[in-house]
Amino acid sequence: MSDLEIQAERSGLIWENNSVFVQLLGLSPVLAVSSTAAYGLGLGLATLLVCVCSCLTTSAVRKFISHKWRLIWFMVILASYTTLVETICQIYFYPLSLRLGIYLPLICCNVAILLRMETVASRTNWIAASIDAIKAGLGFLLAIVFVSILRELLIAGSVFSNWQMLLPSNGMSALPSQSESAYFFQFANTQAGAFILIGLLIALINFISSLTPHPPDQGRDTIVPVQRARVTGRLITDESRE
Amino acid sequence: MNTLRPGAPFQHSGKDVAQLMQTLLYALLPGIFCSLWFFGYGILINIVLAILFALFAEAVVLRLRGKHIFLHLSDKSVLVTAVLFAVAIPPGSPWWLTAIGIVFAVVIAKHLYGGLGQNPFNPAMCGYAMLLLAFPLEMTSWHVPGEVLNGPLTVDSLGIPTTTTERQLISPLSWTAFQQSALLAFPFAVSNTVQLQEFIDGLVLATPLIEFKMAGHSALLAARDSGASLFARGSETAWEIINIGYLLGGLFLLYKRIISWHIPLAIIATVLAVSALMYAPGSVAVYGTPYLHLFGSATMIGAFFIATDPVSAATTKSGKIIYGIIIGVSIYAIRVWGSYLDSIAFAVLFGNFCAPVLDQYCRPRIFGHGLRRHSRPAVISERPAKP
Image 1 (cartoon, rainbow over the protein chains, first blue to last red):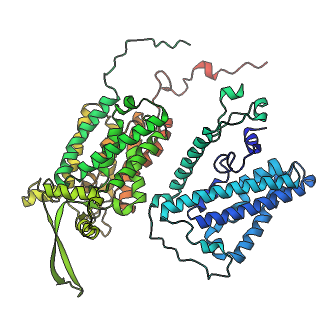
Image 2: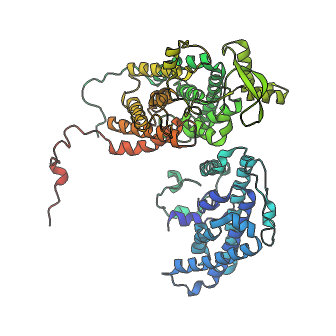
């Protein structure tokens, strides 16, 4: 069992084991779509929906999936629900789907969801799988909303502007007019600024979680995990391995 | 393993980091004095503010990292970063611009990568590039002390009535000029914001690179021909004399062997060669004369002071020359075809990107190895005998 799987099976998906800030999975939508809080909330909700549905389906059909071809099946399930959510979004939230662009179909490449399907949903019953999926999706949602609120504050000095895009509407009527000229701190609008911001947030979260002492992990003491380039979370020190 | 170093008694040059940085600061003085003479107290205010904020940020980060504060502050490297940054940003910048830039440079570009000796990019240029991306308007307006007089209403050739505002330059070293520069740096000291805005708008002077498509000649030579004084304030010769000041400082550094000749010579030769190749007098696309590219902008301080940062530059001799050529070509390319005003910061950062690769591939030949083609040591090429 690799270190990544041990990390993925730890509880506390919303805070201690957040898929964005601790596992560093699914970073590209967080970097790309988080320039406005409304976009972040929209993509987070879509990801939460896809995550829950995919994990439920995986848990329901887990007896029929061969171990050898499981990743193909996971991708098929994930892509089906992504297409469904994308179609719904294009029908009812057309302006939002225009703004989200390619990152809405790219939910099916979100490795954070795939990890939940692989480690939890394909091994447990539907209740545990759905609870786990809701936690993971909520963690992703909170992370992307947090980052996008901060970035929108830095870029434009506003929070949840264009929130009307999150209401169901018909056609182009709700397409908001964007005021691109009112930049406050334009560096946060670039990808480099988003990277630096997320890095600082990870440092802050590591600092906060280092204030509270961790309960000793049961599974960690028996297994010496593979040393790999982990960058966040609790680093394995020599004392904890002994 | 025997860790004792055998061999001859090694002689130490007696220089430590603090002395090296101090010499670097002394070498910056001629250029700074020339800037002070031509552009007023803005650069001095920039330097003081940048040093204060940099010392504060460095002390806080050192405290957070659990290092010895006074030991690391006394190596003066943060002073060099602050002075280079303050020289790069335009005079008359508000205080918050200086603060954001220098805190970014010290905290993120230097200490998050591991502090002095570990930073892959030049901290001062990181701060400058971040400010240029974040606040393009504030970073492209140079303020020079002066008085604005509204001229008479005139009608131009298209029939549009315009008022020509005439700028009358005052002495940049006078008390009024100091008041103006201080007001620019601390805008909150003025209660009447409208008045301040008019006041600031009147003082904006374009950097020479905005005007370089028009200027195709050397102002120094023009001053020689017309008999104008070299050090007359507000004259066209300001940038060239400032660059000559930095050139003198750089030659002083070469004399003191703080820097080697490879990087500055490669940069200057590349800029000279490329601009001489591309320059065509009388053609439609005006790229500026080679002289303007060398002395009309920040090329000298970039070549001698910024690109030669021993931490972020390439280290071997051939690597240094290739590093200088990369920076020289990017200086010219970004300046001529790019949309930014001056290109030193981006060119140096691009060169810093390339420096680890250059260090990997431009290693010097190890003594006794690699002279002849088939002179591998027998131990390495020997294969284990087949069982």
